[in-house]
Structure formats: structure tokens, C-alpha cells
Length: 433
Image (cartoon, rainbow, N blue to C red; front, side, top):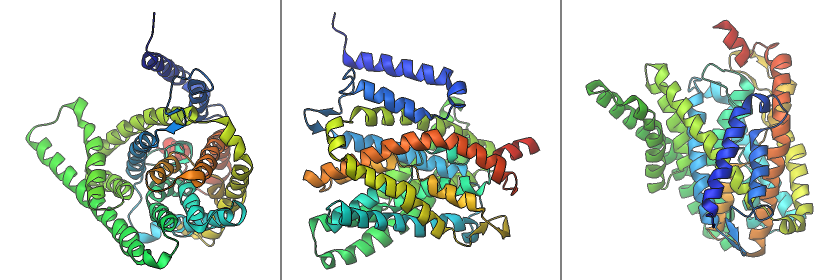
């Protein structure tokens, strides 16, 4: 009797979901993230295990499929980040985000580019592309260190959530920069277009579209609901339609769809008088996000090959050590100099909080998407192999070390730092209600 591989895949994934769901109470107490479990299962389902998932077959790699899947995962995740944030939209209240995006991200990109140029034998185009691919911190895998709910005003969690929501979009200009530089070494030929179109227009139109589309959907929702209430089971699909409409319409006008969707999440959070509405949307979107996380990390595990990973192991190790232990921590420390709590401008951030910003630069699905995008837009040959395997290895190490360290470190932070500085950690809020 012949059983279709697809049916076996469904059996394995169904079993995995049942086990992690029923065992989530135990797993969440371990210094272990769900992503590590998905990664191990993905490896078992790949070419070194049962060969059930075959995104990569006979040296043919379906990068387009990986790109489409990761693209959808990221837009759902950045919308979720926007929905979680209830902080007023005032410049001074978003000081930490401005620093993390405006200082830390460029520091990370250019420091990685220098590493690529000086130690990895890359030209500037390849090196900047590597920096841009590895720059975004991940909104999908970082749920452990992000805002827990709409009552959470903790500065560390807010900073990491808003950074994860924004830098997946705002690393895009640098990806374009790297791709332009790959095709044409003479930067003068395209630098003006890059500044006008890929920097100014794409960011501005992303912000405007995020506001306009979200407000239009909310207005239509309210108007229709007054006439006749939607089916309760169907109502949460408004969130998915907001994500898809915002993303697609923004991409049509050449704006950054990721940025627009994050902004749309912020707008939706503030647009309903009944806070239960956006809360229900958040719960629905987070469930979809969790399901998509399973699929994406399974795919990542299934495309790993030991031989090319070993061939690039020394280069990957150099990038990982410098990125996780030097570039991100030092960049975060520089970026947070003199920064104060948004709810008490007299009090500066605790030094441990600043170091935790440096440690929790989790890499993941955003980097996978940018890598797949680069494959489809001019990255090929030996440079593609080199950048790909450095990226895969960096993400795997991040999944493991950040997955193991996030629970104990956040528990320590909440007991020792957040409680003592009255930073409104989630536990304190819950007790106050």
C-alpha cells in the first residue's frame, strides 16, 4: 500500500501540534522555546531524516515559495506588534524606538558590512546585503520578550516589540542598496534614485497607506455593523482583510508593505471605542501567528544541509560571535545613552535593561524573507551560497541560544529590575486589577 508523503506530513504536523499544545504548560517552564522543538522536527522531516518536506531537491531550491511563506508570516506578525501597542503616538514617548531604529539598526548593518568586506572576502554590495539581511530583529520568534498584552507598559518589552515591528520594514532600503551595488559598482548611477524612491517615497507612502487603509476598513466596519451585525465567527476576519488590503495596496504604490501593516495595527488599536474589539482581533491574529511560526521553522529545519553549513562554519561563527556578543550589545548601549523612562523622565534606564536590549536581538523569519527576496532579485552564485548559509546558521543559533535564555532572563528582569523600578511589569498590572 502506497501512502502519499503529503498525508504523512499532515500526520506528523498534527501530532506535533497536539504534543506542543497539550505539553505547553510544561514546555513554557523549561529554558526552551517552542521554536527549538519545531526546528528539530523540521530537521527530522528534511533530507537527513524522513525526507518528507522537500523544499530543496537535487540542488534546486524553491526560494520563491520560502519568500511567499515568510512574507505572509511577517505581515501577520508586524500587524500583531502594532495591535499590542497602546502607548500614545507622541515622539517623546517613542524615544526608545527611535534610538533602536535610527541608531542601532544602521550601526548593526554597517558593522556587519565591514565584517563582510574585511574578513569574509565580500565586495561592498554583498557585505551591505549581508548586513541588511541580518539586521531585522524578529517579531515572530520574539513573543517571549515582547509586550504580553495591551496593559503592559514595560520599557524593555515595548522597545523590543516596536523595534521588531518596524525594523522588518526599515531594513528594506538597505537590502535594495546592497542589490543595486551588486548589479552596478558605480553608486553614482543609482544613489539618487535609491534616496528618492527606496528611502523617502517608500517609507512615506508606507506610513500614509497604513493610516488611510486601516481607517477606511474601520469606518466601513463600523458603518456596516450599525446596519446589521456581522456573524460573530466571521468578525475577526476583519483583521486579516485589513492586513491583506493594507499590504497589497501599499505594494501597488511602491511603498513598504511591512511598514504600512505595522502602522495599520497601531491605527486599528486606537480606532474602536470598545477595546474588546481590538483585543479580540489581537487574540485571533496571535493564534494565526503561532500556527505560521510552526510551518516556517519546520521549513527552515528541512532546508538545512550539513556539508555547505560546515563549509561556511568558520565564517558563520565569526558573524554570530561578533553580532551577538559585540555589535548588537555595544550598538544597543550606544543607542540607549542618556535614555529615560517614558513615564518618568527623571529616571534613566537601568544598566541591566540596556544590556538586555543588546542581548535580545533575535534573528528569524524577517531575515529568511530578505534572503529569499535577494535570491529572486539578483543574488546568485558563490555570493548567494555564502550569504545564505551564514544567514541560516545565524538564525538557527539565535533560535537556540535566545530560546534557551529568554525565559530565565525575562523572569530575572521582571523580579529584579521591572518590579524595583516600578516599570509596570505584567505581573504587577495583573495584581492591580
